Every structure is written in structure tokens, then in C-alpha cells.
Length: 269
Ligand code: ADP
Image 1 (cartoon, rainbow, N blue to C red):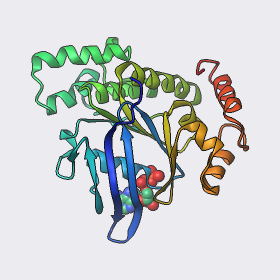
Image 2 (cartoon, rainbow, N blue to C red):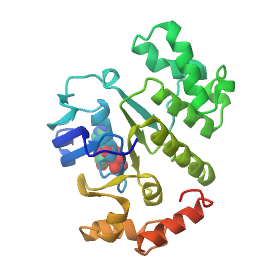
Image 3 (cartoon, rainbow, N blue to C red):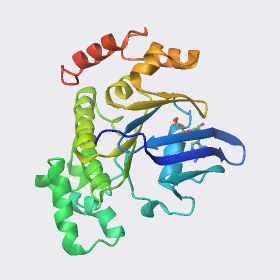
Image 4 (cartoon, helix red, strand yellow):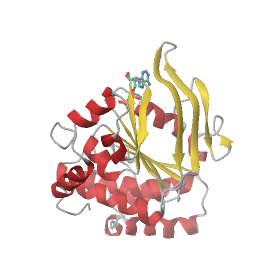
């Protein structure tokens, strides 16, 4: 699906304070557009995961509201939010088989058993792991486990998928492969994805838009090329420029894309 400008999710004046004193998300007004791949990018501790956790329902905003469509979700528990999640450490249940892991979101949503088997088989086929259905997570490689986590997040056809540093535990080659896999799923399934990373190169290759976080504030939200060409302040310019895959300088966007494509074996462009 092509990203639209229609907002699927809206944060209005959202703040989050931990322990009554640590203000870690300062004032967040953010629209997440239907069908887009939005990346939350920023240094460690800047509030990205907290933002994701509030959207998922595992943390509650101290102030402000989050809407999905027109509906405020304050009182909606996580498993009723129609949101799939993928974490860095996969978070698979070690005592369950792959098939049972992927079935879990359907089971908790009360999907009839007769449908569960077929939907799990489809989800495992989608990530080409159907032949491992009977194994347990400990018998799989890191890359395979992360694909199972993806299947589990997608099996109930959620409106929205949140991914928190999902590739952080994988080596470079596998990470690049999985980036393409995630992009393929985003495009073919018409997903709306919110993706957290501190890796500028990853954000650049994958995103329709990037929200640059620093110290609990979104400094700029824009298309990748606009962030490069028109950073709104020195933080964005430095963060995008100094630490990026381009080796420490802000290059123009054509050079940036060419370099990233080359690094990824020419498969990105
Ligand atoms: P990021 O994802 O950008 O690394 P986080 O949202 O994880 O940032 O963290 C932002 C700040 O909030 C950090 O200083 C972190 O230590 C703090 N923090 C995160 N979770 C909690 C928590 N459950 N209790 C108290 N402080 C927390």
C-alpha cells in the first residue's frame, strides 16, 4: 500500500514521567499515517521505546491522549489494541513450539481453533518457516527466531505493527537481509509500521518518514531526503550527519542512496 496522509494514530500533547520525576517524553504531537513506514530515530534514552510502549498499552501517558482512528485508547488493554509487536530479543515463549508461539495472539483473541491452524500455517509460509513448525525457539538461529516473532506479530492481521530495534541482535549480513524482508512485508501486506532504531543507515533505507528524537522531544519529522537536505537544527544535522553510514559527512541524497545500495549488495535501489 502507498502511504496516505490519513492519520491512523494520533498523539496529542503526550507526556510521560517515570517515578513522578523523570520526564522522558516531554510533549508529543505526532500523526502516524495509514500505510506508512515511520521510524523513530534517536540516541539511546531519548524516549523512543517509551513512545512505543504507550502506543502498545504497556505504559500509560502521564498527560495527553493517543487516538487510533477517532477512538482514544486510554482504557483499551494491550491485547485489544489491534497492534502487533516485535522486540529485539524476539520474546518467544521458550516452552512452546514455533506453531504454538505464532498461534498465541489468535488464541488470546478467541479465534476458533479450526481457523487457528490454517492462519498459523499461512503466517509461517509467509516467512518460509513452515518446515520448522514443530521445533522450539531454542532450536532455531537468531534470524529464524526473529522471523517467527514477525509471523507472530502479523498472524492476526493487525492494523499497526510496532518494531523495537528488531534487528539489533543480528549480524550485519542477516540484518540487511531482514531489512529487505520487513520492507517486502510492509509493501505486500499494506502494513502501517512504527520502527524504532538508533541506526541512521537502517532508518534511511527503510522509512517513508523519520521522527528524530532527542531528550524526549521530536526534533523533526520528515522524509529521509528532507532530513538530509533541510535539517531544522544542529542536533538533527549532527545526528544524521556525523553518525551515519556515510562516514561522517552530510552528503546529498543521491550519493547517500547510492552508498547504501552498494553496501546492501545493490539490492536496495
Ligand atoms: P530510548 O528507547 O530512546 O532508548 P527509552 O524510552 O527506553 O529511550 O528511555 C527514556 C528514558 O526513560 C531513559 O532515561 C530510561 O532510563 C528511562 N526509562 C525507561 N523505562 C523506564 C521505567 N520503566 N522506569 C523508569 N525509567 C525508565
